[in-house]
Image 1: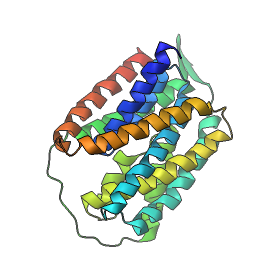
Image 2: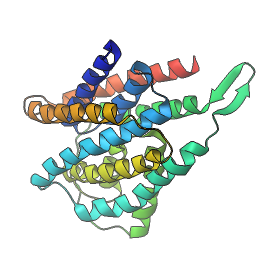
Image 3: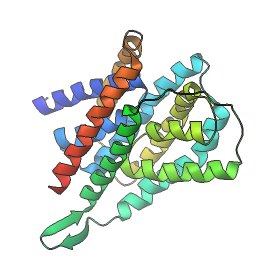
Length: 263
């Protein structure tokens, strides 16, 4: 095993730690780690990210369920349109994007570049939501028409399918604002959606990509160990301060990706 792969597995442990400590952000670390450290193609990296985050989120779902912080009805209502959008995005939309999109003077816009820049844009949004101060307020649980839930899930599923993210940083605010469920329960409920979406989205990739199963399973196993460790450490570390610090880190990483891809 070479040094690069050792660093990659250490990175997997860090990915798990972050998921365990703040309940999200796994894909934000996984994709750049696979692309820039291990040299994977962005399409393959986003596929692997879906498997890692989806499998890891199962652990988180179980833990939140034991605490009574999972609303299966709302979670499954969002999951149905979301997993359709994620699967179709990974199976048809991503492979359909041409390898070379445009040439402007001597500057070539490629498929890999577009995926990574789009990923960086989502990272900017995620970082601002983590950095932003403000008290989280519980909301009154009220039902919204399912047609709204359907189109909301469809939109977020398409975005997360393209960037290969679990989408927890998108689903939590959606569940609070649109589905009107309390913040703590929104975090737990989002894990159901992330698990289902990520793994079904990955099935779309299995049909179009060659998967290095040994590496992927070892990477995922180490990430799960990190989650268990992170959940334990979260009892002793301030979640709010950690989330804000991670938000600044994500912001810097987004700037780095933009610089790497465009400059």
